[in-house]
Image 1 (cartoon, rainbow, N blue to C red):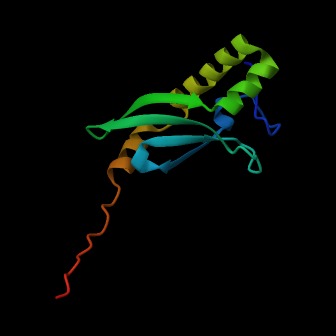
Image 2: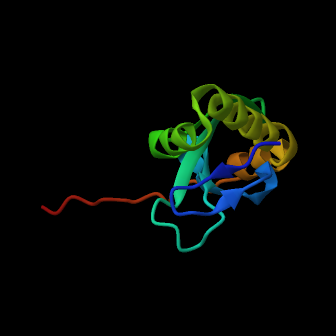
Image 3: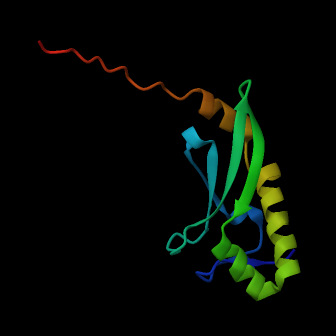
Length: 120
């Protein structure tokens, strides 16, 4: 398989090397992070999904332009596009526990209610 490279210099030979961060729960989005903790880009892409009947349903995945452009300049446009698609496919199919994502998403706590009294 082709190696991708982050503009920070970190080479990525397998989709399992990316770090996945499920921080934007209210947006149903998983961030794809560079495996290099000191990377200046840090966030390389995202995965969006919907939750329907307590099941996570994949919506879309994409890498951000700086990562795509860098790899296109290193590998050539066609080879880079195929490699990027392949890595995204592997992340979505093999490295995300969709059942766990749906559970974490549906168990979110509701915001506390705030009562406001009117002063006379």
